[in-house]
Length: 242
Image 1 (cartoon, one colour):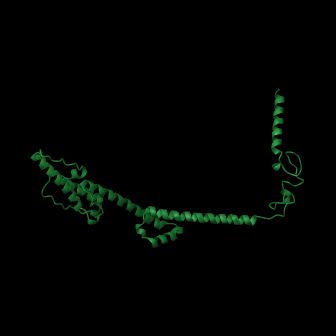
Image 2 (tube, rainbow, N blue to C red):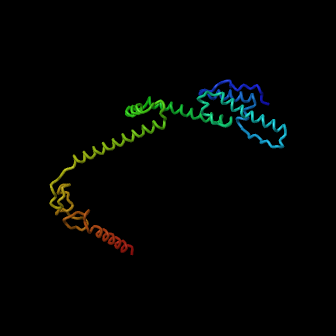
Image 3 (tube, rainbow, N blue to C red):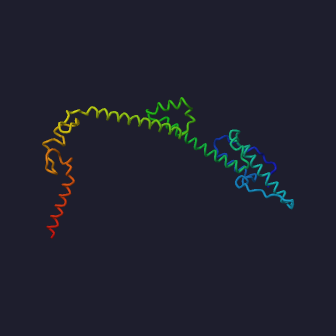
């Protein structure tokens, strides 16, 4: 039976710090007044009817009061800044679970903030301009880890793109320097190589058709000669077999 002398002021007010200690003390406090089961299970109260007995009516009233007491205890045991997070909760169970969820989120944010702080202290010099720009646009103490990483990745991608363009420009410049205009070839009229290397020079002898005036690479009878050679070899093999 729940005591009617219950003090709704919890032994400690939770202000966002030392949640685990506060939760243990609150559990013991609620258990002492037979309210912990209400927080954990939150069983529905059996509805009364016209035929309900006096005992059923009394039990219904007691269960309803316990639910209200458990909710009030939790509300009165947190600071106003924390109360604003559970103000819309209808039951003690909902308020307790909401607090647990908020604490997990606070823990994740704290962990992210520590990582952000470490990144800012150890960041390479090439990112200093980006960090300065971020400082001018927002408070770095509130920047999230995801936001910081995205900003640094964007700068790194832009830097890599600029470097690619620079390298491309260097290659093109070197190519232009190496590029030489030779005198026009008297055979093909091109200016990209010396005349002695022309495929169509008069003294060139084709290894495929044995004619002069071109090399094997550009011989129009090359494929025909290759096929004929292959047939000849095949016939010789057949003659040898038989």
